[in-house]
Amino acid sequence: MWEQIAIAISQSTGQKFVGDRIQSKSGGCINQTAKISDGDRHYFVKTNQAHLSEMFIAEAIALQQICDTHTICAPRPICWGTVDNTAYLVMENLELGTKQNWESMGQNLAAMHKVNSDRGFGWERNNTIGSTPQINNWKEDWIEFWIEYRLNFQIRLAKRKGWNCSVSEKEFYAMIPNLFQDYQPQPAMVHGDLWSGNAAFVGSEPVIFDPALYFGDREVDLAMTELFGGFPAQFYRAYQAAYPLDQGYQKRKNLYNLYHILNHFNLFGGSYGYQANRMIMDMLNPKE
Image 1 (tube, rainbow, N blue to C red):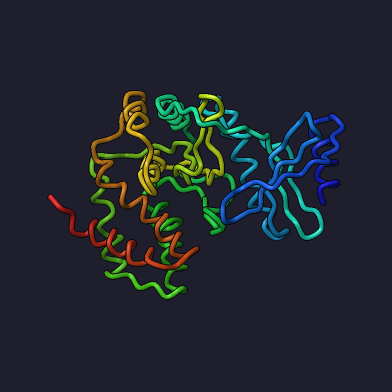
Image 2 (image 1 turned 90 degrees about the vertical axis):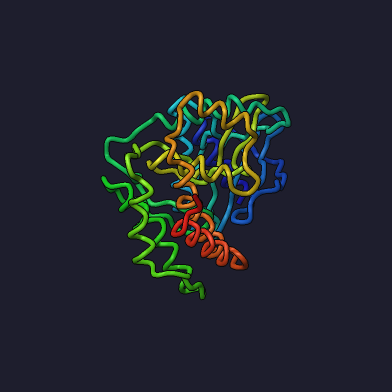
C-alpha cells in the first residue's frame, strides 16, 4: 500500500518520492494516521476503509478551499485515492508545537468567516461530521437548513439508536425562529467541527484541520469552540474585536451545539442522549 501511495505523491508533486519511512501517529477515533517520509520530505496520511473514500475527497476539497482563502492556515492536500481495500488522503505534514497565539487564532478565524457564498447555505457536496453523513444541499433559508439538514437528520439517527426526545419535536422546531429575532445570518465559510482537538499552532501560526466545511451561520463555529473545554479567553476577545457577534449569540449557541451532542450520541451513545434532552428543555424554558 505505501509504495502505491508514494507513487501517487510523486505524480501529484512532480518529484520522485520514495517513502521508505513510515511512522504511526496518534489521531482521532475515526481514521488511522501516519507520517510517510523519504528522510527529507514528510507527508501526513490518513487511511480508512475503501468505501469511505468520499469522506477523504470532501476533506481534501475543504482543506484546499480553506487554504485558498489565505485567511487561516490548514494542511494542504497532496493526493487521495484507494489502494486495494484502503482509502487514503495525503496532506502536507505540519509540525505542531507548544507555542500558542490565541489572539491570532481569533483574528484569522474571523477573517475566514468573512468569506461568503452567493448560493446561500450549504456546500458543493455532502461530507461527514466525524463519520456521520452531513447533508449540505443548498438552501436560502438558514433556519430551514439547520432544522432539516442538521437537527432533524441527527434526531432521526438517534431515534434508531433508542433515543427519545423529551418533548414534541414539532413544538421544539416551532420555537427555533424565536431565537433569530432581529438576526439574519450570512452564509459564511465555517469549519463545521471546530473544537480544541482540531485547532493548533505551527510555530506561533494558528492552524485548523479535520474540517466539516460548509457555508452557514458563523456562530456555529464559535459555539462549538465552547464545547469540550473551550478555547482561551484571548481567542474570544480577539474574534469579537475583529468581527463582533450579535448579542443574541448566547441564546443560539445551545441550538448549534445540540447538533454535535446528538452526533456524539449517535457515534458513542452514553450520557449524550440525556445531555441533548437537557439542552432542548433549556431552550424551551430559558432562564431570565
